[in-house]
Length: 131
Image (cartoon, rainbow, N blue to C red; front, side, top):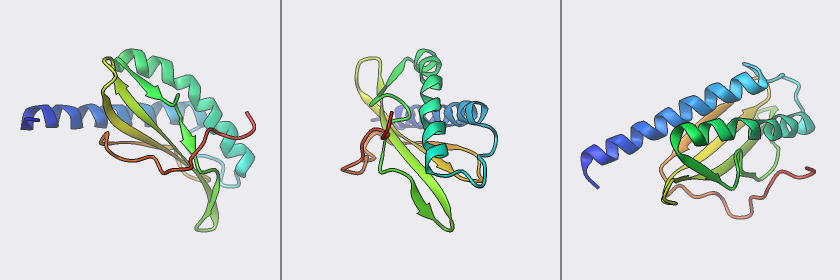
């Protein structure tokens, strides 16, 4: 991979992160409820599935599994709750271009990061329960 193509791929991941973070904040509110419990975080995560189609069309890609992806479930962290989800991003030809991690933390704004395609989704993660 040349330096130009590597920089292009990095710029594409940054744009994807920014767009998904922006759309997640619009869909769930700029800041999640500080007292959001496991059920609330799971409901918010399910609602994020609606933002996938316009992003897939705009960037000519698809999410596998479907956005927001798989998770280890809601975890207690630093006195609060968080839900981390992940999915692989595939280019139009099926080539992996990124691994997207969506983090929902009670009391904070949603955050989406697009890591390089080689970033692993932890083994044992599964679709959201109860839906």
